[in-house]
Image 1 (cartoon, rainbow, N blue to C red):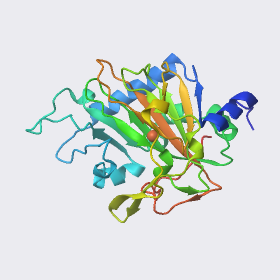
Image 2 (image 1 turned 45 degrees about the horizontal axis):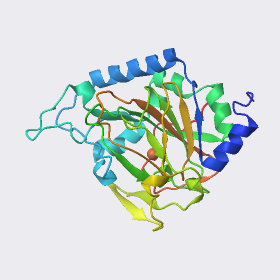
Image 3 (image 1 turned 30 degrees about the horizontal axis):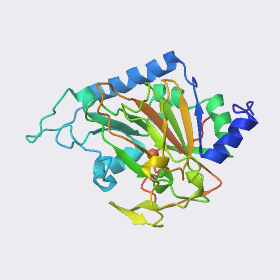
Length: 282
Ligand code: FE2
C-alpha cells in the first residue's frame, strides 16, 4: 500500500470542513498536458445537428441521448449562450464548449494518466474511500464571458449511495478567482441532509426533492480561490456553487467523482456502467 498523502491534521480538517485544498498537487507540465488534450478533443469534435447544450441552472435540460450515452463515452457539451437565434455559434468552437464528459479517465490515455496512479489511490484512501470506484470525469471550461452559473447543489445528488460516500476531486487547471467563477462552499455543510436526488427511469431523468432544508445563505459561502495545479477535495454532501464567468479569461477545471465500492450505488443514478468496466485509482 502506498504511503499516506495527507497528514493527520489535513484529514481532520477535511472531516471538519467537508473539503480540503491541496495547492500544487499537479505540476505545470501535468496541467498543460491535460489542457492540450482537452483542446484536441474539442477540435476533433463535430457539433453536427445533434448538438447538446448543457444547462447549468436547469439540470433536466442537460439530457438527451448524448447526455445518457456520455456515461460511457467522451462527449462535448455546449454552453447555454453559445448559439445565437439563428443557431450559429457566437464565438469559436473552442470557446463555446461547456464541458467534456464523462468517461475520459477510462477511455483516453492522457486523461487516465492525470486521473490515476499511486498518489491518487493513497489520497482516496486517506479521505476514507476503502475501495474507490471512479465513476465520472468532467473537463469544465467555464468560458470567458459565457461560462454559466452553477447554482447551489450537492454532488451526492448525482451519485446516491448508501451510506453516502461520493467524493469530488476538483483540479484547477487555471487560476480560479472570484472574477472567473471559482467554487464557493459552505464549510461544515456536509453534515446537513441530502436535499435532492437526480434519478433516471429508462430515458427520463428527473430531480426529486428529498429534504426541504434551504440552501445556505450566500453570506456564509466561502470562495475557494486557488491557483492552477491545486486540487480541492470535497465531500458529496458539501453544498457548493460557482458564479458565472463574466471575466475575459477562461477557468478550466477537471473533476473526478468516486464512491466507495463498499457502499450501495443506487440503480436509479443516471450514470451506470454497462460496457466500460468501473475501476479505482490504481
Ligand atoms: Fe458540484
